[in-house]
Length: 286
Image 1 (spheres, rainbow, N blue to C red):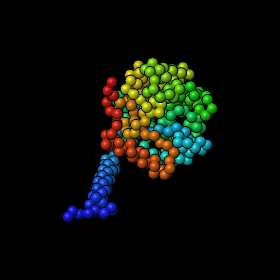
Image 2 (image 1 turned 135 degrees about the vertical axis):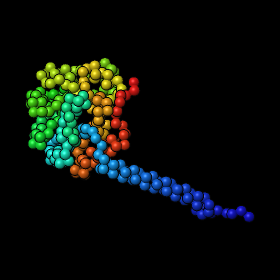
Image 3 (image 1 turned 90 degrees about the horizontal axis):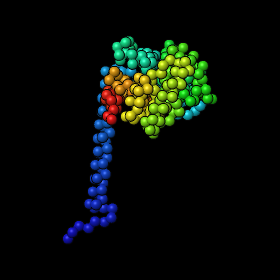
Image 4 (image 1 turned 180 degrees about the vertical axis):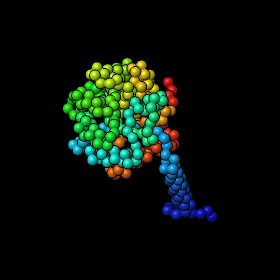
């Protein structure tokens, strides 16, 4: 006589339970392996720190706006203090490019502090904090926003440049270049560069891609418009092998966990370099 199985009992229930157990086991093993990998990467980063130029991305520094782009002056100052305490020396993008050509030497731990969009608090709040610590920075300006409420004026840009701030382009209108035709993208890059130079600022050599987005047709356009480099939203460390038109940059949003979160973002950039993930070496395939 064959066996009789009652609902909730017998082999079918046992089989389902055993299958569920195997899933848990596989998940546990995967988590364990990930933990081992994370520990190994952390050990390598600490014991053999990867070499390269760290580029940080900021936007606003003030106590007024409360959004995903705004740091308070106290928070920004604390982060600059951490960089100084950890032995970093602030350089410009052009410093890095000159070192790549053998025209100057880089400090032991170089960092580029950058600001996108060109908000007025970059002048009123961030600049004094940087100067108090002997640091420089790079500001990427959306040129059609110059002089609008909340944005830098031409006089402020001139004064910032005199005080050691490198100025770059963030295009004319801050529209994603990847959604444009070649002609439209060229127009955005060209107009912003020309406007800044026509206003008497130093030659603009560096561009920040709006929203960090780029495509394979953009480096050729930038070369033709006499840009020497461009920064992205990809995290990592820049070496002389990094494509200068896809420089790696680590975004620094408002912190929810204090200075530890800032250190973690820097550690992530180092970990990406150690693992060799998305480090933008060579050139993109056409």
